[in-house]
Image (tube, rainbow, N blue to C red; front, side, top):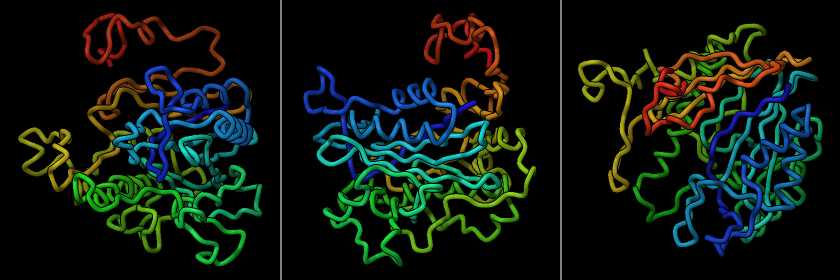
Length: 351
């Protein structure tokens, strides 16, 4: 079966939906729309990439976190998807953002080797694309054009005319005057530290040379790769679930120790006011998480989605089967209760 995972990301453009309450919006395709259409129409990850990309360009892409024209939210104006299929067994990373003038879309996709781990931490991860390699890279028409016109990228920056640094060109780097003034450092570690930690947990032998303090911004020197190898069969389902639950336990960034953790070792850190300079570590597991899932993309209808409500470190993952003949029990889709309304009849409160 086909599976999709999502991460809201940063970009240098921003767009808004075409709706009666947003006269400045021109776009009609959000990431939920694109994902649902791809799941309905496609059996393979490549098909999903090509389908979503074409619709985004034609209808215009918008992020759910774009702010408003008077205060555009570049830190949440794009989307990144991890897309996998059971057959032929491919994994693709899909990065999409709004195009020129709050319209259309610019996107890129990269195929990940089957023996690699590719984390996404709220920022683009596709770097040096080979534009002449359609087996491993797909992209929107004229993908480099806006970057060249805006001076964000030049072919002279590359070793070959067929290479394009997507994140380097279109990733967001905060300008002077933003609030808080250390926003670039915040974003740097907000993304980069989690990328390092995923590799540290799932492929430690190959992660040992990755600097956890390097950060992940468009113009980071010697940037992180999109993915790292992992020995075949070394990454288990339980390891991935445990990674979802992580707070950097046992590292110098451990959120369960120190004065801020309190007497009971709480890893939770509440959001600080925008004017405050400084930051807490952004762990993989977050107290404000509504749900998380781990998907096993298998052929012939054998795919399994392991779904858990609430923050990953406090949930129980339950299996939902792609070949099931019935939907989830009522407690899993009832609206009698939710995060802000207690009910004994919904699974959210039980798990």
